[in-house]
Image 1 (cartoon, rainbow, N blue to C red):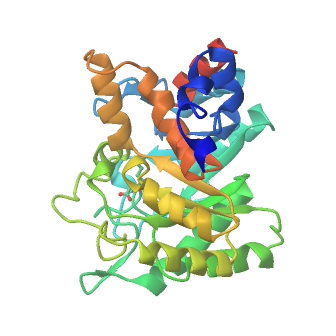
Image 2: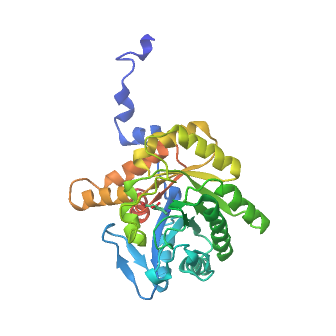
Image 3: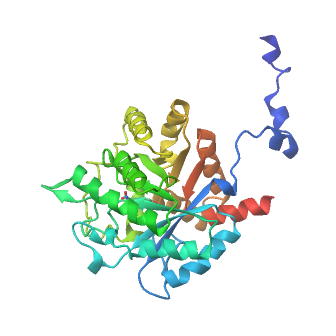
Length: 332
Ligand code: PBG
């Protein structure tokens, strides 16, 4: 083992110059790794700033087209759509989720009329549509699993028929992947992709998002820990992944991102399936506020996103997608 010792081995040799650092680099982020979550809102002529997420906006559909062109020009491969609907459309069962002309379906159609290149991902969950802000319907003070799954299947089908490419159930109900896959197959949507929110933790990092979609309005101090995972657990993430894969998901996701890199790494070693991370709203807000206040350099964006690749991710959902695409394009 002598040859491993100093001075035969000097770890710094491969760090001396940029060319060699580039040659030995194990993981790099490319624009192709990015999914951009985008907020939409009812009405016209709106581009509303989201105060909790500086630099981001909610777009009304008439303004969406321009933003889509912007995203296309940056070569971002896919977006995820999140709606903020008006309170008068919300009710306990989230029935607006099943309206074929709801804002999400109309957004998908508009995007698909504009371009066939951009992949569209849609959340399957009821929280933007329920007046209580939970992801499902409530029975006896409990988010009812099986009743909720029935509605989610319909929601997934409606979004698919509007043209959605990737169905992303974010609700954490049991058994929903199998039922959604079944309804898609039964309706001849054989190539619709499913990216399951597999290990979605009950997290305070979702706070800014809940403001952005208006689901925190009546949510108060309630939490989602009767369906989202406990952050103390990791074996449970493996069981969730086993189930989702056996039920027919094409990809799995871990959420939030940075505090859960260990989970991504574990799943990556255990399963041969593409893994995605969601760098969530709270992570975005922390980083952007630190950058805007001069506390951190903007290079932390690339550093955090590359760490997801290192942990084993195929790609990342990130609000930094446009910013980092510009950084990556400048570098090339
Ligand atoms: C809804 C959903 C949430 C996020 C994505 N889909 C919030 C929640 O579960 O309360 C969070 C995304 C983010 O914080 O950026 N089921």
